[in-house]
Length: 64
Image (cartoon, rainbow, N blue to C red; front, top):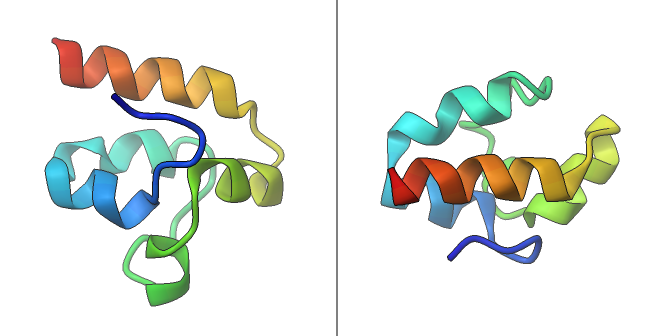
């Protein structure tokens, strides 16, 4: 289960098809080592996005 404390790199390692969820919030630097080490909460704070909404989308993706 994905939480706001999950590391972005871990999510991408589990399923690279999650990349569009990050791209749609304006996170276009997924290959950057710094971005891969951020938590969802940190990334959403930087990009002005609701972390809970992203967590829901990602969990739905993995459930599907």
